[in-house]
Length: 293
Image (cartoon, rainbow, N blue to C red; front, side, top):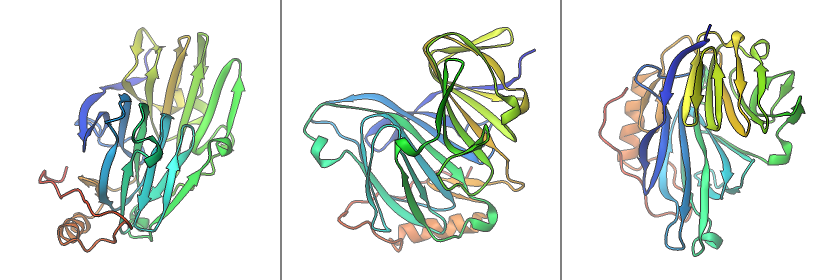
């Protein structure tokens, strides 16, 4: 019997001058554990005249996780951080009560052909930490726990699972796991998971129960402790999830909070441009008009 409760297809969305595949939120599923937003960037082949340019924009009430498969992004934020992220590393930015950042192609790559491919993820903060001081942590690829078992390679990008702990400093019980296999294998990891769980197929396919699922799909499990599937050869999947929060979290644009008043205040502050500034940046992304969802 299949353990799949919901299938979410990747949908096109725009972030500034760049198209992405949006995976979360979805009208039938607003969050998986504390994960409230996932974008699949690329793979985009950019010419010497094309670059990623997301001007300064604000966040509250969440942590962002950037994880690249190919390419490079220069992150700059209102804390004074200036950090280039490359494949396999993690940029973990916690907005708390408010932070502003930009994401751009690094200067040394702006006049060359390049590829950009990765994931952008938002993790909501627990209610009691939504107004914490913002911070930024960069974790190098070599510091991410990685291991091989029965011909399958695993990476614990964030959180805790399999008796391992990632150095990414998360604020609630969660996991974000990479699984890669070059041969067909049966995967049974339910005993290592908890809370709500989702599986994103980056490339290749998996079989669960009677059904086969292909790339660019998210599968939401009925029961994370029953996570068992057959992974096809040359397949990469990401398992994400954790303990859901007891209260609902609302999203407006880049603002996440369990308190709609905090979102309204953030909207007013961004319109008035009273958020902290990113050094060296003069542009900013204006506040959009859609409603809180």
